[in-house]
Image 1: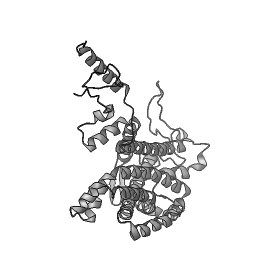
Image 2: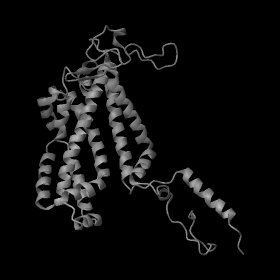
Image 3: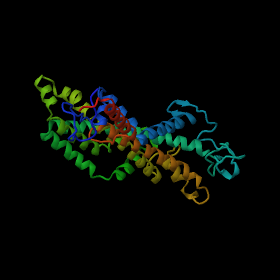
Image 4: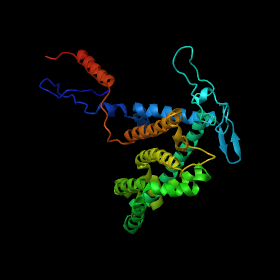
Length: 357
């Protein structure tokens, strides 16, 4: 075990003892693989871990409560109502959820309340969360694939390939995203959330492509790429086996931020009437359909708005955690426990060392 020297060597420094200049954080990651280091750094990010747990709970709640309704497939959930049923109004549609300890504590038959017609808002919000989450994931996957492809080719080959791809990217990025979304939503919004997500993903890859291009321009000049090229590796192998794995941190972080912006964009489009449309629903559409009842039934806005905020914040916090985990330049101060352990270890060694004249 190497000796820890937390102080600068002074006049009383013992000759022949080489101070250990390795930081506490570096010492804690010695002998670990890159994946283990990333996982350890990520789970130290408390906000990211809590957000991951909350997002997993939201996804599980949304997809198990009211079931799934896909073309030709209908899987029921455990909740007694679905988003199309109109049961009788209870207490003028007020929420029956009561979390205050006492005799009134309970969930009730309609915890999120009902609208004017009688739809159970819990079931409607769960269906809206399903559609919004589906669009978020599809936009993230489609945008990431296209962005990585354009950025990798432009950064690796440079020259006229870089010029053509980046000028095309500049042309697409000048078109306002909300305008593109409105046109796309008006054309395919009524055909389902999946198709809407695919078309939105086709116009959301430009920022990620620029990030990937910058990473490839930097990594292609590294020694391991020159070694692979000298050994006879093809361009395809160099891109996918050598450069792309070293860019995965930037790609994952950018993809999470893209997904967070996608759910906000879908909410805005659905609120304006250009996103998911009846007979289906989404979180933005729920707010849009009930905006006239804001003064009389405010709970129709509380729940879809709360889920929009929760999902967007969770994805952003997860992206922050992944950024800190993948970026080796992110320095973190040692925890008080680590500093206390190091100080105690130094003190025990000082006491156990024989006195010298």
